[in-house]
Image (cartoon, rainbow, N blue to C red; front, side, top):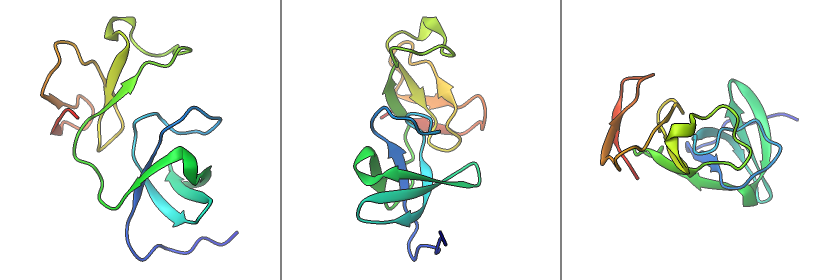
Length: 115
């Protein structure tokens, strides 16, 4: 399959569980946007996902995404409880302890409001 660059930049994130190599809450650049599938840039590789399973936006969000803790989570800090935040820039995960209005990412050092 040949991937054509999109005329306008779009971003997408997964909104359902599935067998895809995507981090919940993280935004990915859209390579191709079709009526039934979306091709995302995931670590410089194209990944096809059904369009019904992603949220697509025209501007990359500048707020932390709140994500419910998956039932089968194995690499998330137990102290984080039933939800955590995902950085809009780098996809790093963080605790929502104390219901913060803004968080600074420990990985990219950017600071954003919490959604």
